[in-house]
Picture (cartoon, helix red, strand yellow):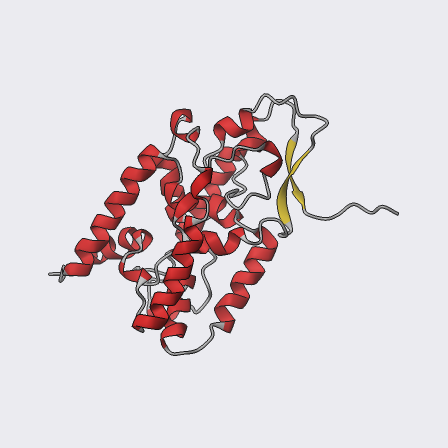
Length: 261
């Protein structure tokens, strides 16, 4: 099985597992390792960003959620973005094609951190889960299923805002591959901090590289430096570069320093 097929299988499996909460007994308190709305009718996990906001509105530090996210991040970094996140999988479908994948946008790498800061700050100031009112992942996996499964649903202002947000993100994703993941995802911002230190990474062997730059051509996140693969804050460890490298200069590896003794 090709690496790309394995990635699709992993994304499909993650989506199925995320929706195992058919009854109240199956709705767990586990922290979802990717962005998935706990408002989805069948949600099995709790949304990490939504949960953090809830704790902030009560004036409490979310030790449980941040602890689990820290474990996820230290082990896999942003690999959840590339291999599991259902909203990321949608972006893969929307961003298919090398023309969109080649678009670069490194100058605005910091915007996702601004979104994370605003998410936390506005929750504290407004005592509300403000980000949840706009989250496009929630729009797709919670708002739309709600209207389909609920008899005579009440479609108010927030539903319209959700639909506008989702439409805007979809349009932008058609222009720039993985637009949401590159510039706006607050959970991606959290994970990206650990990309240089997480256990699972992509190793670059400079002695094998022929500088053909095929890896950068297929990168859905617009990474523009071969040496940054695996450690860039925008690297989602999806493995497209690994799969396309003609000389196998890139490979999945564990981020362990070699023994010099």
